Length: 137
Length: 246
Image: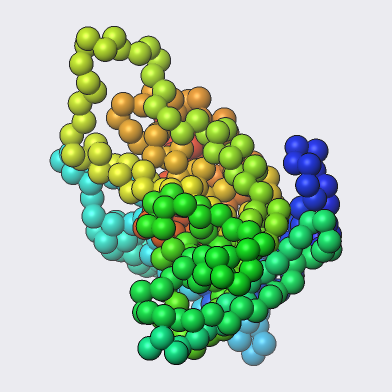
């Protein structure tokens, strides 16, 4: 977008349309953290793509499959795990703001919703982890 | 105390002469700690430079007219105390993300159009005759929408929203918060009428939850909450067989 004085049909006078620079997200800490949160989706998407390829490779059977275990890949996976945790924590922490549930005709407190969400996340992680370990054996 | 002075660096833009806004500094007396940025602007207009243009009205955070960027943050200038910016200088600019008409005055046309598009008033399928009495609401029913009814249309949330800055077609925080206010009102029956505007691509789904709109709101409204709740509502209405009920 370029800075320019322009004229509009409905207003007789010229107006100035201020440009929004590409570095807008560096102006405030809040904007920066938002961009970090959004960016975490990119390495997670790459890791999931790799995961799909590994599933295809594993289709040949347990005896022929050898999982990728290079140092670079382990480091990348750990970074992705940290990003996934950051993304998940920020998302689930906001669940109490977004979800409106009534119990016994009274609104459920946001904190109770957040605690429930984290609890479900923990249970789902344990179940999925158990299933994967079970298949691995 | 009366010897204290502070510099106000106000943005100036004359559409007849200037290609872009430029700052102009005014050194004014900082006579007492209760002075706000709006008092400083009024002093400049009355004693230093009568050509400075800006909007204001009530001076008590009710009318929402005096919203400007104070040191880069959207603020009601009637509630921005100079003591918080001491020793200055204090930079005052028009609200970002809006076309500038003159000096500190922005063009509100786009916001007014969007506000009207969500029909922020009570819609009834059939009006009850006056003789039938008033609509009764419990305190819990009022609590459902009370927060969102505090919006004063000051547009600070639009100035704080990078999504609106990047794409002016976005319906924006205040309009959605006010739509939510009426959708949650037990007296209202207009949710289905507002839904096409809210659920379109430039409506709630354009928001990527930056959350700064809720941070800058001077009335404690949480527009980000209204938008995310509306996303959930529109989704449930779409996927659940009974979701489209009134």
